[in-house]
Every structure is written in C-alpha cells, then in structure tokens.
Length: 62
Image: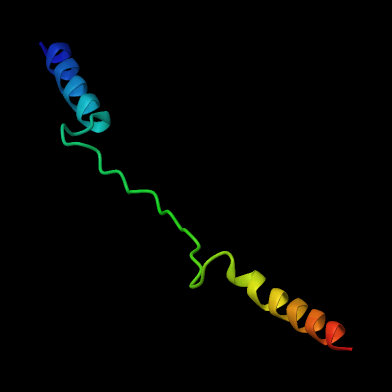
C-alpha cells in the first residue's frame, strides 16, 4: 500500500513539474525595421544633373 501511494505521489509530482499549460504560447511579433528616405530615389541625381547642365551651358557660351 505504501509503495502504491508513493508511486502515485511521484507520478503526480513528476507530471506537474514538467507539464505545460493548455493556453496558447505567447509569441512576440518579429521586429521589422525598414529604412525609409524622405525623398525619392531620383533626388540624388538632381544636383549632379544641374551641375552638368551649368557646365555645358558655360562651355557652349564661349
């Protein structure tokens, strides 16, 4: 009888020590970092094109 009670106590203690809950696991959403520019991608070409146009105008004026 003592062995049966000891086995029952150990089985209950063992299952509760490692058992998980039935609730859904809480998963954190992945952090997505997206680099955005305030201007369009063509904005980096405007200044060089203006400089080339000014140089071309200066050369053609001579």
